[in-house]
Amino acid sequence: MAELIETLCSLGWIVVIDEFQYFNRKALAPFASYLQSAVDRLRDTRHGGLFVLGSIHTEMTAILEDRHSPLFNRVTHRIDVGHWDFSTLFEMFDAHDVTDPHHRVFLWSLFEGVPKFYRDAFEQGVLSEKPDHRTKTLQGLFFEGSSPLRDEAANWFLRELRGRYDSLLKLLARKGPCAYRELVDEYGRAGSGGEQQLSAYLQTLIERYRMVEKLLPVFAGDKSRKARYGISDNFLSAWLSALSRNVEIARIRPVEDAIARADRALASHEGFAFEQMIRQLTEECSRKAVGDFKLTDMVRGYWNKADGSDIEIDLVALDEESTTVRFGSCKRNGERHDGDGLKRFNGHVDRFMTSKEGRRLSNWKREMALYSPAFSSSLRSKFASQGYVCQDLNDFATHLGHPPKKLFAANERAFQ
Image 1: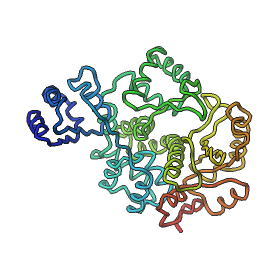
Image 2 (image 1 turned 180 degrees about the horizontal axis):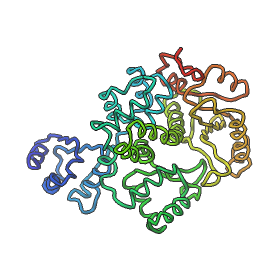
Image 3 (image 1 turned 90 degrees about the vertical axis):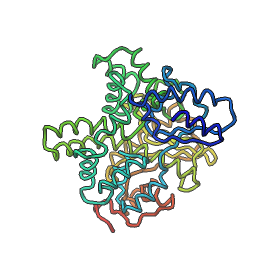
Image 4 (image 1 turned 45 degrees about the horizontal axis):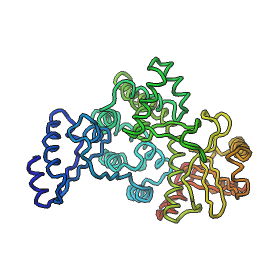
């Protein structure tokens, strides 16, 4: 096969190998050595080319970037293909009549914009709007013997990771985004090792495997002590925080109990995912010159202490051209933007404006925005009369050219 690839390339063909990660499997591993010889002979020629494609990042990294791999340092160019954008995702939701914004948040918190996962959901018959869609989705995709995603995390994300890496990921999944010092304390309390070891594992998970991301508050430098660390992939985070243990429990408990436990555990995960969703939606709308806010910087949150004990703002969006700053509060239920919630939100923003970072915006126009999957017309009118901007998933879908076919009544849990 390696000789055939070399021959084709020498004749000017461009060869594409899909699912290249499978050559990391033991039975196929020798192929990398044969391909290395062919690539080295072709390297300085001007004929043909070779593309290798793979969707399992850890295994592609092991084949192409591990110093002990025959193909180490042979890659000349790299193209990262991202997930579906939200415009495409809303188009898919419309095609399958997934109109309930809460259902959309649930699916995105599990699968983000990965086409394969939605195809699996469709083939299992769970990509549809039903009163019990959460239970049916979890059961069909994770809890039955033939469920396609039952072993997905182990096979796709965690195959190359063992021991301490696994422990650190589980810790991040359980606690959500957290500060470095908090990680050190929890990691040491579990008897997993010292700070130096933790730092090395964390760096590897960020730079090599891209499973963890470093989160910074607005205006913070890269070395800020306020940084937080969180799992970068929704599927992996949901699996480690809510699904993995309950899939195991289903072997010794009624499957209905295990699914209910998993569904409850997903609530915290969905809260973090919804904030991330709103930030990305805001950025996509600005990038496509739609929506109600133009950005001149990436959307971030703000916290002045790593544990969020003093000031915690979900979204800070900046438009330097109009000198406008938008502060946002995200709730998975619009009713949670109640009197106490708004009082806390306003208090956090007021304290931010007295901080060193906030004083940089003292002459800017200030907007206060509330975000939820759906707002009823009565809530929207109420908040608008108090000076708040209201944005829900129906608004974002409309901005991106996919207005909802049905209007979801958030307060009645029904369709109009």
